[in-house]
Image (cartoon, rainbow, N blue to C red; front, side, top):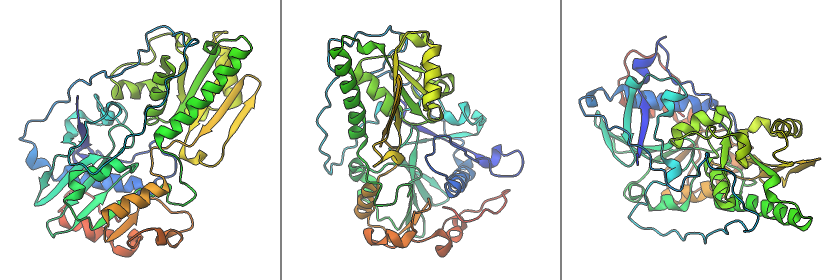
Length: 413
């Protein structure tokens, strides 16, 4: 099982003298103008100074174990006679020194930088989670970010004695409080994913959000059985982005006991993330279909249902997004129902506050604009929230690296 994360050598790969990484993730739930520049610069900083490590043998990614997989090739299962699997008790997290194994949904057997961004494989340098590397006297460690597959947080231990944490996109959770590196390091500055940094975004945990969706399906199943209909006549649809929501729809499929079919766009990503295809089997043989989030409308779903030529009689669709928090949104017309579920791969407000309180940094730099401004949330945090423009971020990080053959960039975020 591979725990490796790919990082591209942006300087060597850039054909036009500009930074290579201009990400436009369709999976983002909000604009990331500042974040894009941040990721681009950090990747450049890392890769530009890894030339002295090229003599080391690259660790080849191992084949991903197919743990608890759901076969997309199996016929639709009969789930009429049994209720959906009930949720297991929530784990009680404690401050332990032993890290859990990387869970199945975090393993990327292929490399998305190659398959989706078209990066030359020769320009990929492999970093291993929790393994510290040294770059000209400074240390860099990648740790699991609990976001989409392959996402990491980067911890920079600078030779001047300060430690900087850049979360990137992440979802904070209590398990992070057992990371040994966080216990043994005093973080000076956190560059924090503040996508939902507002007290109104205090949505449920991912497990709770999944249970909300399953509860709705149980209600639908019971309602159908009362009138003598079968639950297998219902097409379950889950909206996703280019990458993300894998835990949601795969968890739903396991609990319902059905197979998954993904549209070609999503299947390309799943082949890299899950190591297998979800579109080889006929769509009619799978009860749960994964489609782009933009296709979750009454008209589009009605047309989609008709394209399956009577295999299913109605659609129950789910829109998992943190922006659905507090809306209780359900749209129903004819034989199509769309439920909004407050599910996110970004931190809720209370999770952000707890994470910062645990690490107790000297300052926090938001990487996403905060609704109402920094002053609206400052009272909830134990340290100052500082705009990147106010601290001269460029000199705080990039001055420690002599970046050659690259145009000067604005402040790192």
